[in-house]
Length: 477
Image 1 (cartoon, rainbow, N blue to C red):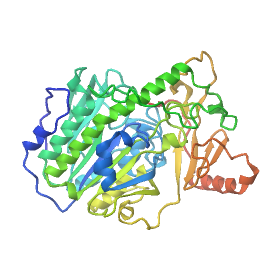
Image 2: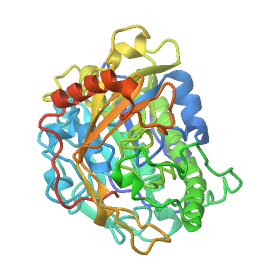
Image 3: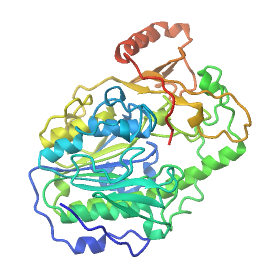
Image 4: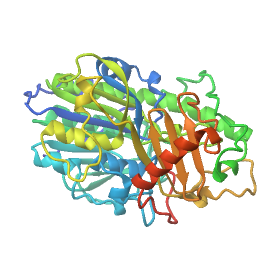
């Protein structure tokens, strides 16, 4: 079904006029599925989102130990769409020979599975890094995807949308703020499309350079600076070479990170309003009580922890993400659940809801967890990342010449209590997260940990074969 592209007369996001203009849709036996994937959102930022807390967390399951298997945008999004690890999708980086849109095989994804099952499928927002042009991947009935921008690292303004194969350009007017444009399109689709829906809402927020919506810029101007124990870590002598090569944070960098923290919080307000609009649209069409809604992110990001201000690391700041599920059919008691859930679990869960298979998916169906806090579940998982070369690292302010070779290829195991990683350099890190959640003390050289270290080495040797490739190229944006 094709839809006309909406015009926008103002900067403020309004859903009421759309809702009152529509008649409620008939409820269907198949649940509607809504997946909301933010961009570089940390797991600990949901306090800034009252609708998410009230309508999702207070009515669903909040997974406090949710992770991505590769902490970088394009590999993570490929895993979300397929339920498969990077070692299966072949997407390891955001660009170059082993990453980006052109590397992704799109013939079998959650969109094609659900489309064949009778779902009306739609994507609104970011697809994969490097995507552009008028190509519409298979399985999508409605396609409103960001397809390039004047500044490829800034998709808030001056961007292009591919709307069902037609390119539409946007400028710098307040009403062109990409989150609001995408939200209105998603609401229009929900309100006017019959039958069961799969809606993938994927705005750029709160990716750097963070730009809050018009009117929200100073909403958190007085928020206290973010200073966890690992911030600008003083002693990194036990860390791998790439961390030891990082200088202490320059005052200019600290000021930049503090400003970013304020802007991230402010940018989440418009995102929260978009979530409210989606929920209102589901409610007015009679779908809400039959909808599976998931809110998550493609990866986390550092705010100065371990002297780092980006992502792609094996640390908790990069691999941990927010993960909230509302599904009134299955969840009778809202709660926080501490079991380990992953981005690769999303596609097989959606397939299970739709009653179809999930070819090549390596994740697990989350439905049993939603109704019970006692069902057996995974006790560990693998995370993996191909090298991020020096040329793609963020600038080191205040440093004129410093040898930073990049983040080496690594593979690791995250269990319920420990995190272990082995780099292609042979360096290792081991943390007891129950005692050291900020990963300040690397135990890999401790004699008392020798037995545990041997266990993790063997697990990595088994689960990471052949392991991530090392190749030039790629990007951390």
